Length: 53
Image 1 (tube, one colour):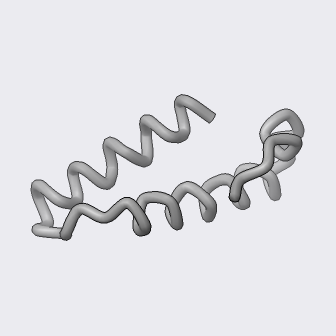
Image 2 (cartoon, rainbow, N blue to C red; image 1 turned 90 degrees about the horizontal axis):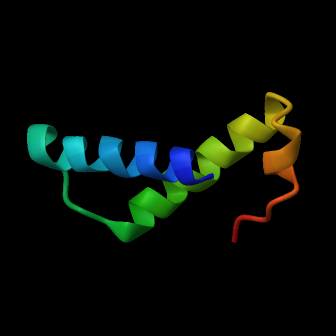
């Protein structure tokens, strides 16, 4: 989860710097929840046991 969080934070920061997006904690949290769901669907069993708000 730490690696996924760092990756999503990096992507969000790049979006803000290079695409003019507005920094948003809610957007970042939404991206994290979506990515978590995709990883769980791809059978990341250990990740699936961790709950995301």
